Amino acid sequence: MAHVGGSGVRRIDGTVALITGASSGIGAALAEEFARRCADVVLAARRADRLEEVAARVRGRGRRALAVTCDVTRDGDLDDAVAQSLAAFGRLDWVVANAGFGVAGAMHKLILDDVRRQFETNVFGVLRTFYAARDALLASRGCLAIVGSVSGELAFPKSGPYCMSKFAVRALAQVLWYELGRKGVGVTLIEPGFVESEIRRVDRWGVLDPQRPDNLPRWLRAPTGAVARKAVRAIVRRRRKVVITGHGRLAVTLERFAPGLVAFLVRRFGGRVGR
Image (spheres, rainbow, N blue to C red):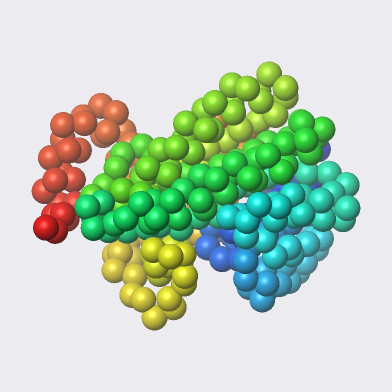
């Protein structure tokens, strides 16, 4: 049940949120934000040690937390995660398909397996999450949130597989919004711009390299906490879509109303594709 607390935050006491990719970045921040709003949290990701750290922070807020080791690219892992969630809490109200990474490189230098690997996590991982949680969400009349990207609205050089995957989940979110809305289930598409996270330190095989520099200027990186607050507010209010970060909203607006200008700017400043 959602209600507004004394702080002005809409609390969601007695509800349960499951978040994939919850061991770091946006996923970890989402877990803490759901806990701040008085929801219990299921954390799903590959790194058990990092999950336990996030779970400890959630419990520190007085909420229950369940950490489930899970790989969204493996059939059955999400089904197990949902089963453990229902066994522990009896329901699921908010399911956030957040797990993802980015394959970078000029398309003519990549191979088909690079694109397959990208889609296995960013698209089929979302689908596995949806299919595993579908019955629980129908039972609770809850909400599915899909973490897309501004790169799902306009594509950039040397990010082809990533942009393709985010265009795909934008279409999926739209379809599910129509189909599940008739059954009382909300669907929210979250489209962040640049965020302070580990995604730019993950290589094209999905492996984190802590020593890899993040060359994105700091002023362009939005804090994960601020992104999570806006995302959870949109999910709780069952908004259809929210674009987060000022530069993200500007890019989407320009692409819609001045596509020629965007094309010129991307060609001029987006980096030349090597031969």
